[in-house]
Every structure is written in C-alpha cells, then in structure tokens.
Length: 384
Image (cartoon, rainbow, N blue to C red; front, side, top):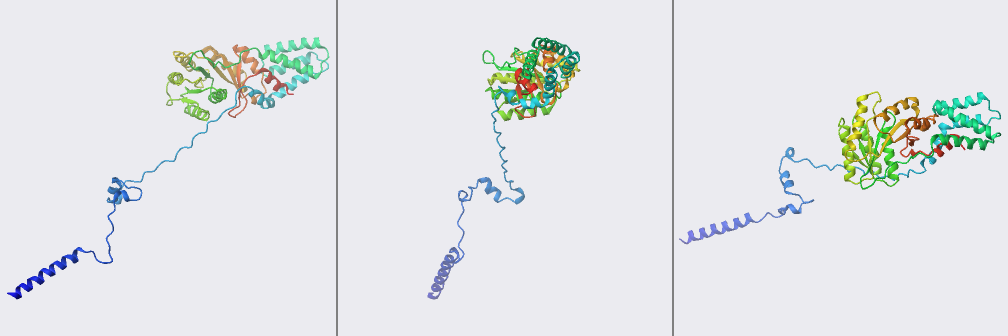
C-alpha cells in the first residue's frame, strides 16, 4: 500500500515539472515582440496589412504622384505709347529707299517735267495709289515753285509735311477700350488667312495689358484648332483669360460665351478672334456678320479691326473692300510693314475705307505691334 502511494506521488511530480518546462521558452531563442500596426515605419494602414498577407500578384500597385507642372511666369509687357518710335529702325530698313529716292529727286537744282514724272512714279510704286500720287506731286510742285532755291533741310521738311498730311494726322487712331458702366469693351478682329490675325489678337492683348487693362481672349476661329492653342499660349503669358470650345463649334456661340464671361468676370476688354475667311466665299462672310449680330445681343462691339498684310498691295485692298461691306470696319491693323518698301499702302487703305490705320506690325517679337503714329512713320521713311 505504501509502495503504491509513493509511485503515485512521483507520477504527479513528474507531470508538474514537465508542464513547467513546456510553458517556459527555450533559452537563447526569445520570441519577437508583437508588432502593432501603428508602430510600423510610415504608419501602415489596414489596407497595407491586408496587402502584406496577400500573394504578390494581388497586391495594389504603388501610387505614382505626377510631377507638378511648372507655373507660367506672368509677364509685364511695355505700354503701347512710344512703341513705334522704339521700333523705328525696323521700319527704316524697309522704307528708307523710298524716302531717299524722293529726297534725291526733290534736291536737284532743276526739276523738269521728267523729274516730276519720276517723283510721281516713285509714289505709285510705294502703293500710294495713282490719284493720291498725282495729288502729292502737284502739291509738291507748287511748293517748290514758291520756295525757289531749296536746302536739303527745307526739302526734307517739305516732303515730311506733305506725307504726314496725306496720312492724316488728325484722324482718331485710339482704340476704344473705355466704356460707360461696367461692361467690357468688345474688339472683333477680322481678316483673311495668312495675314497674322490670331497673332495680332495675342499681341494686342499684350499691348492692352501693358496699358493696365484686364483682357479676355475669345477663340471664335473654330475651324482651326491651332488658333485656339495660339491664343491660350498668348493669354497664359500675360494672365489673360481665354474662352475656347471644341474644333468645329459654332463661332457665334463661342463669341457670345466669351463676351458673357467677360461681363461676369468684369474684365476691361474682350478681344474676339474670328476665322480667317477667304473673301471669295460668300457664305463664310455672311457668317462673320452673324458673329457680330450675336455678340451685340448682350454688348456693343466697340471696334472691328481689319488685319491686312502690308506686302499684298492691291490684293489686300480687294480684301479690305469685301470686309468693309460685311461688317462696319472701325480701324485697320497693317502687319509685316517692316517687310515691304510699299509704305504708301497706309494712305491708300485709309482713302479706300475711310477709316484710320490704328496699329502696325513691325516684326515677329511679342511686343512688335505698335500704335500707328504718322510723324514717327514718316521720320522712319525719310531717315535722319
């Protein structure tokens, strides 16, 4: 009996010792601490924990953050006043031959009929038009007869005075950008393909921003996607708003939306670029009239500027006449005037249309559009 009790006691002791050994961790192999989600590097989320247990193929791809687009630096263009004087050298390069020829002829000791005929031909060659060239020649001939002897300075002053008179120093060449009330001034820009019309809109926006105006550009040339892209580029450089629609959209609708946004955002000037229509296509010209009528349902059109390429001569005059019949042209922008010796087109355009040349393009640079000043123009023609 005592033997059985001893054996049972040993069995109990053995069971207790074995249980303790099973519970204690083995020496030298400590368990890793339990890792909490909040203690992981980077603060892993529940989604991270789920992905960690998923097969590699099922894990969510890492999110790529696109690089930020560099901000366009807003430029501060120079004001419009005095630009033609600053750009006079470019004008002189193309026009000086015309001026020097006239000065040389008028400086001869004796001016016979052949000399006066040569003076008239020089004026006609400069695209001044036959009627104007004959009138200028007759006026100069009378003044020479009165003066008698002529010094080079007197000849230059006489010729300058006559040319300035023909160009029209008293014409109102200002852009009508001031309006009563709070509505913006609305400027429509028209012209055929290739005259630099859309570029002129962008440069005109720069001129007005340089003069302290806020500007909105309306891309109503919806037949050419590049036109809207060009305007956006011009607008972004000076902080001007741009209204555009998909290619092929109704031009009148785009022009209407542009003016409406201009009214809502209280800008000073809205410039509407229209499609470069070929003057031989009557339907497209009628559409140009429609654009103007639709815009005027909510705001008066203050300026309709016709863009003409100064190098096209008589062809440009034909274009001008057709546009003048469709919309009420209020002013002319002569582009590429630095690339032609035919500066007399300024006089002819004004005579034909009865409206002044208000702006001239004198290069490819962003600030090469200048308000037209008759005296500075003639000085450039005649040289120092």
